[in-house]
Length: 253
Image 1 (cartoon, one colour):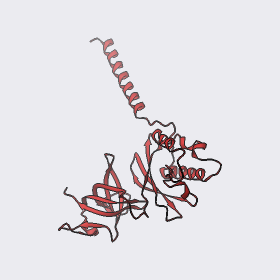
Image 2 (cartoon, rainbow, N blue to C red):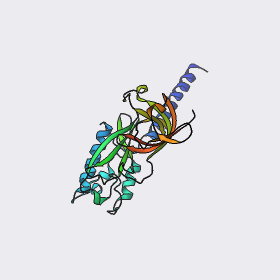
Image 3 (cartoon, rainbow, N blue to C red):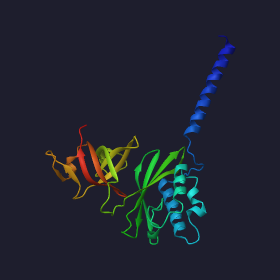
Image 4 (cartoon, helix red, strand yellow):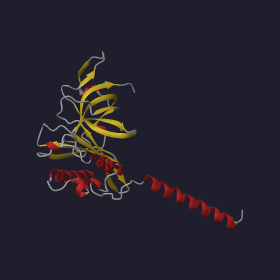
């Protein structure tokens, strides 16, 4: 192969590589046009405060104002809002996770409960009325250097007595001292979410948190039952402070 042909081959390879990178970038880009560079918890708080203000307003709502079409919200979530437009007063608002009749005396509290480099999940709960049991789990994804709201899921609230468990996972319980940037005196569960490993949440135990002993009888959980790393199957309620543990089953590694 002469020198000219070698140059042509090299240029062709470079062009093909560039095309592959560009195509891959396009195919993995989010479908919204705007990414926000604020902190995820601030993005959620601002979005929720604006949504609540417009829901409570007699003159407008999030659909009239265009907030339901915000471009820092994923296309799938915008479609979900579109489907919910015109919901009746006894149906859940798709963002606030409360019925319209309960939104008169309503305040919002937010707390970051799951954090990864490319994903953050924030729990939004109602304050000011203990009868309000609904809560929202907001998922934000990172793209390049910005964030967008990818999904909102309504879950049972922390005050509801009869409900299904909002957290049911297998994972590993570890001591906070083995993790970075967490309370060293707290136990945490490391688990997978949608097939992605590396999620963590603090564990909250009380007198109703049950763990099996060696005879498989249920007893109140004790911190010394957990080794440095303990594989478990866990049921509990996801709250703004962490996972309220209800049942723990120890698994073989």
